[in-house]
Length: 496
Image 1 (cartoon, rainbow, N blue to C red):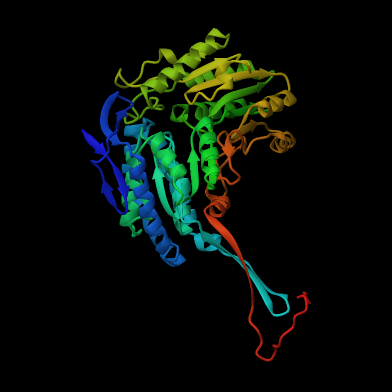
Image 2 (cartoon, rainbow, N blue to C red):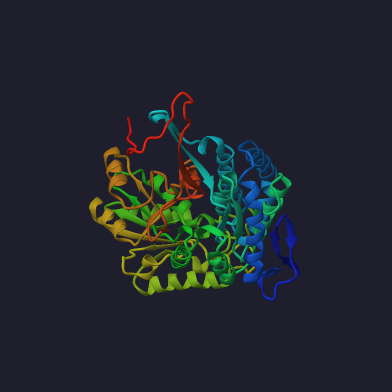
């Protein structure tokens, strides 16, 4: 049985853990590996290695840092197929989706390669007589990244390249459900020339997470996961005096106005609702149809959904399994609760016949019509291939519905009316908005993050916010006295 350990101080570490977890292939239900679950002492060892490395890495020139990042980018690009295969084997998403995840991660690496421009400060001459002021940004030291199961490559790469480029050392705690991809990244960073200890990977569960949140040498924490855990991370790390960006859950709405192109909207709803088996924080899970378009739109979505092939992600299927048996059962229970509450199962994924091992964690695309706001299938983040259709009578009712939701991660509006789109982007209380774009994930040079219960902290991931999160600003005021002047003056200093 394969044993998945840790990568600390530039080398593999394994064999000492007293606790282990199981890693499964979701398409077959077969246990493929055991992952070591780090104790607080093992986490402390990784943090101490990072702390030692951070003291010299912060003084590495921007040229040296970018050289490492360029080399790392080339390794990831050349081996992207290998990385996608590892993602599919442990997460279950289809290979094409896994390849897309790697591409998104590469975009952040490429942004981090331009860190000299992003780190530039400002300079003002003669703010007072012979006095200059200037600003600069410096690294924090050791930072922790805690990433979820659904994007084992992309989410770590939202944070790690920017943190490393700005001069920090990183301890990454990936999901114990699919840990292998993160270890490949660590190995390739070392191959690219990153000094030992600058990037470390420690596998574990809540015990490891809490150890990172409590360790005094960890200056900042980046987290992506469910809202309850994001709230816990934010509160505990903040109490310890750390800087925190904790990205939580979502209930993303796609509003379809009566003038929208329904063919385009139906394509978008299927793509955004069922891609990666709905295990995306940016998946569309609530489709808000502004009447009179609901009947026609539901029919078009059902027609497209019927042609989807669910099965093993290595067989060219459209949608793969869910990540674990327990999660598949949880999502199935939400479908059952929705139907019991009066939702109409237009497409019922519980009846799927997958192209794959019958022991896989299967649930097909599910389309529920006539969902109402009080149903659990709407109120809760399901994180599965379940698209709920809510019917409303007007634009105002649609906006009120979206804004009343406690989450505020992403949303989309489909319309051919520029005025309506502009009004929607202004009025909706959500952090990322798409106009005829169902999954409005920004490019790496913008920042990713939501509002309300979808984000705990002030700064978003990557882009300018990422640089600000992993650095501290410093302002220097200097005077170099002219040797022609001098003397003692005890009067109150004034600006002239």
